Length: 207
Image 1: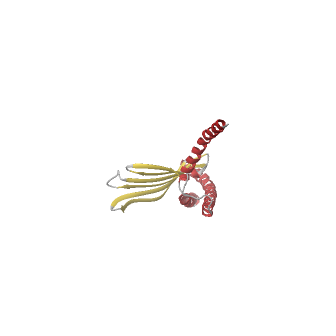
Image 2: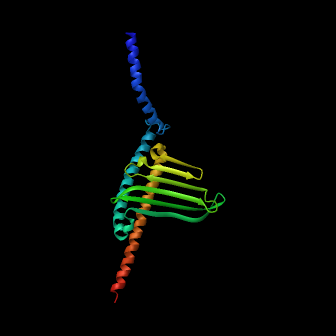
Image 3: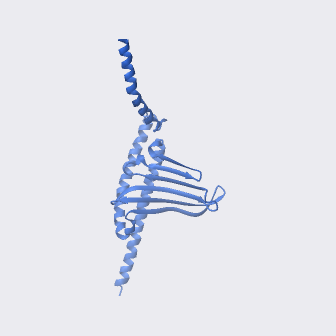
């Protein structure tokens, strides 16, 4: 009887070991400092859910604007890049450098496939000294968005869901702000194209 009990215990251990390993791996890939049962954590997750919903609405608005823009500028059908900051010369840490920030949209079937937020900094006289930061957001699954940090000697890649909830919120807020800014810039482009077209048409009919 004792032998049967031991065999049963051994079989149960062998069965449970892979499950425990999977659970351990799952915890190691998340934020182990987060207390999932706390009200603070619940409030953070609520903020994330609200941001994801807002981003979804912003994307719909942007896609509508883009559909109009493509009629005027067909070259934007698959990709559109909006430069948000371009500083050809600045002094950083005592060295002359340049800075470029932009947001790039990839479209597929009129829908946003992915969004890249990028910051590229490079020293003017020492081009090997650079720092590139990039976040590639996946609208289909924002938590699987990729964060990349590159400097001249190394490159690091992190998924958004591997970050703390606080940093996930910061990244999503950055995306939401960037989307609002992009929608505004597209509105400006559309207004400029309309004004240019109206002026041209007016010239044609001004006898």
